Length: 199
Image (cartoon, rainbow, N blue to C red):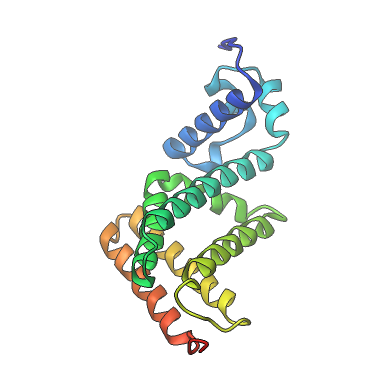
């Protein structure tokens, strides 16, 4: 049954994304289609198609929304914990793991669905590179890293944080253990690669 409610385009899109995440959370990404989204959101199919055009467009929009939330949480953590390298690393580690926990298993389902789509790897790669750049800027306030290797180092840290967070959402690892491990990996990598301070 279609419910007609007048919302602004922005609010309608947010409602549709909320509904899509609820579907993924309850049943997985495989059942997510624009027709199913329209039905669960109480809108006509043309409304859903107008916002996302294709299932791929919907999955990309979901990924970008989660990516924005994670970036915002990371920046907030840096604002709150950025007085030393150790505090910065702890804040970054907590923000990554906590954001994945807040978003839940649906993020993993969305990224897994994207992996199966042509051209989506570029989107996922851009997301990883954005986090790596953010992490690099954060730690370089306290240490100097090699120009060529700093980004690669942070890409490795992001990959480790991603893997540990997946273990937490799967129930195989506790939140605190994942935060500690992510922090140890980041701090160890940064310390080992840091260059002497410029006199």
